[in-house]
Length: 308
Ligand code: NAD
Image 1 (cartoon, helix red, strand yellow):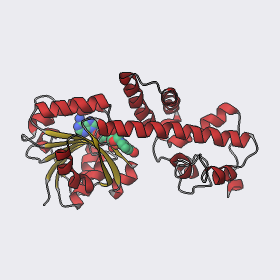
Image 2 (cartoon, helix red, strand yellow):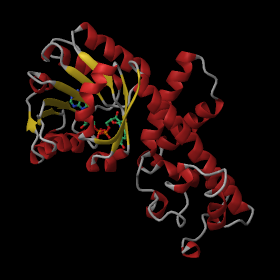
Image 3 (cartoon, helix red, strand yellow):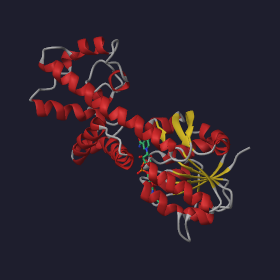
Image 4 (cartoon, helix red, strand yellow):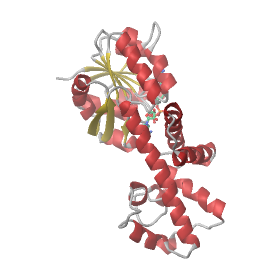
C-alpha cells in the first residue's frame, strides 16, 4: 500500500525522485524554497505544501534532498522544523550528499526527537533520478533499512545497506574519492600519450583491456571518440559537474581530517577540483579536467575529425 511521504528539496535530483514515488503509488507532499521547483512538482502529481513542516505533518516517511549538511540540519531543527512537525516514530531518509559528521548529527537529532532515520545518499546523477535507477548507500539499523527499502526501490535500481549511522555517507565519500583520483590519472595518461605520439584510440584500446581499466576510462572517457556517450563528445556538458566533484572531495577531505587518515592523492584531487570549479569547470563535466592538464602541458587537443 502507498505511504504518506514528505519530500523536502525538489531540485534537479529531488524533483524526479519525488515524481517516481508518485508513479509507484505513494502520496507525496513536497516542499522547496524555489517557486519554479514547486511548479514543476505540481505537474508531476506531487501535492505542494506551504512549508516543510506542513509537508511533514502526518507523513510516515520524511525524505530530504538538499544542497548541503547545513541545510539539512537547519531543516530538521527548530519550532517549525521537520523533527517537531512529524508524528513520533516517523522514518527520516536523508538522501543529500553531506559530511559523515553531519549525517551522524542528523541521526542523533532524529533519535532524540523519537524518530527513526537512515542516511541514504545516492549516485547515478540526474539521469538515474529520472529513470529510477539510482544507487542508494544506506546507513542505520537493519530494521529501519528493511522499512525504507520498498520506498527507496521506487527511486533506485540498487540499494545497499552499508552499516550503521553515517556509513552510507562514508561509502559515498570513499567512492567519489576513488572517482576523482582516477579521472585525473586517466586524463594525465591521455595527455602524456598525446605528447609521446600515441593516439587516444590506441591508448584506449590497450588500457581498457589492461590493468588501467576503470569507470573513468571506459564509461566517462575524458577524450572524445572511444566512448561515444561520454561527455567529452559534447564539449563536456555534464554528466557530473565539476562543482559537484569539488563538493564531494571537500567532504572527503573533511573526513580525512577528522580521522587522521593520510590520503595524499585524495587531498591533491580535492585541490585540483576546487581550482577547476572556481572557473568554467563548475558547470562542465568533471572529465573536462583534461583540458586543464593539456593547457598546463602546452598540448593542443587533437582534432576531433582525426578521431572519427
Ligand atoms: P539542487 O540545487 O538542484 O536542489 C536542491 C533544492 O533544495 C533546491 O531546489 C533548493 O531550492 C532546495 N532547498 C534548499 N534549502 C531548502 C529548504 N530549507 N527547504 C526546502 N527546499 C530547500 O541540487 P541537486 O542537484 O538536486 O542535489 C541535491 C543533493 O543531491 C545534493 O546534496 C547533491 O550533492 C546530491 N547529489 C546530486 C547529484 C547530481 O548529479 N545533481 C548526484 C548525486 C547526489
